[in-house]
Length: 441
Ligand SMILES: [Zn+2]
Image 1 (cartoon, rainbow, N blue to C red):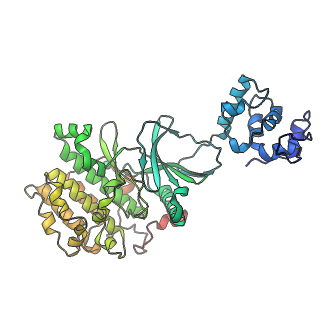
Image 2: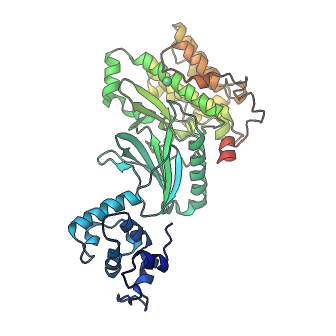
Image 3: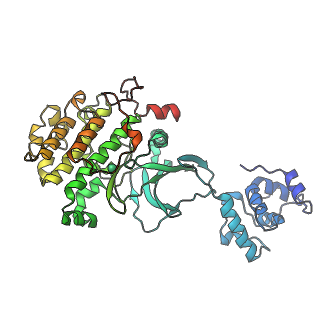
């Protein structure tokens, strides 16, 4: 924050009389120098960075302007007597530069209300409202991002909880590995009561919206027409599994894996799944694209739905529940038949060890379908210990459709131990889903 003293003013502008009484109604007997020091230190610094003569600061003061009003609009500047048009333009250009904040990758900053960020809202893009957050499309230069704004003023009675969630989300996003199927953070900032996450990619569809209205999506119609549905869905499964494994390897549990939290990002030549809202409280992730989370319970593991201890294997179960829907699509099984096992009795029936009726809905006439059925049965095991790790699921899905997905970053190929942990990590699968984040955050 800029600190200005009367002595600074006097030494920089010796020809100005700063002791002159300030004439505004509410001056309270102060001198014009005192007014500038108190209310216009940033504006003075801006003037000094431009070609506008710095002694115009006196005219800014006489016009009753204060730094609180930064950035000054054209209309406010018109109140400054004697400021010619060309100086107004100079001032506004200097103001924009001076107040612009830049961000290193993944940097978080607390900003003053007048500082401006390099992310411009893209009008006419859809705005996605969740219970705590709004997600909008912004651009930094030509690059698109999703801007997720959490407004503490809207959190009201949940203020402390929301604040804790923001801190957790920030901690996770700062450590999450770079992976093509995980949402990543460009930057984040807090300004007034709002915390903003600038995230990549900007996507307008997620798996839930896809399930609900795929017939309206051009790329889906094209895939159907080109007979390309099976490889596409098989590759999504592998890609999501590799993202989940990457989270687990970074000691992050997703905790709320459901179709709403799987974005579908359309690139130039493919539509790829991208996991978002990982590591958040189940109630807080209402910022995802589709906020109708009616069926969330059907993706929760039996242990989550009965408030038992929840580990990484809960994510494996949730992933299994998503696989059920993807495979139903692939096998041409009506969703109605699949959902008979769900919401709310889905998890319940599985808890009874009874997932065979569900599995038997799926075809068994090809080796690939037999593999898919066995993956489903394993991922949906009622007991967490019986479920495979995300790494194993990933390998088994890859075997169903080898080479059908995008390349795996080499740093992910180092082996884990049998239980899905890094060899160095001897701690138990604790309730803290961000062991690392807490340490480094
Ligand atoms: Zn992939």
